[in-house]
Length: 114
Length: 112
Image (cartoon, rainbow over all chains, first blue to last red; front, side, top):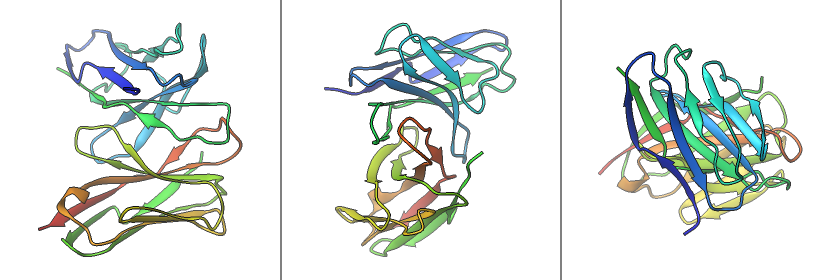
């Protein structure tokens, strides 16, 4: 089945540790995105990548880093510089290069920093 | 940056009632998307709209792309308990490759 997978579903880390969230898609989509969602809030864009080996900062990139070495993978690292990392993280992808911009989302990773 | 105002923020309705929610923007959008998010899950795309005035249905859901290109609404008819969740609108402001802007969400609660 084609889709987007995120792992793990739940992640606990101690304050000051870096942590990497996985996002994989087998939809052959060009563009991938990372969003952060806080309780009762909408989605805020962290980073996005429209092509392999290229990515851009979104609205809240400080304290996060990404890489896009393969088309199907877009991991997000939450660094110790992120002051309030506890949140629900969503990865999305879209075909790209067309006028249709439907983004499809993964199931999310809930990160809790203790 | 772009802002989407989504209302209402929450609704508590009786099973069987119809529901209406909308999104408005201060600027023009070329695409409107409506998503539903269940608790602890990722949003799922419900309806996509690409032309001003377009009216599209998906089962009991109907969405319209406003003529001014600055608004969209989503209606749910004859609500059922599994309609519970958060509904998000999202708009794409320009040409292909532009980022989506998301509304703040409408939390729907249905009383059996």
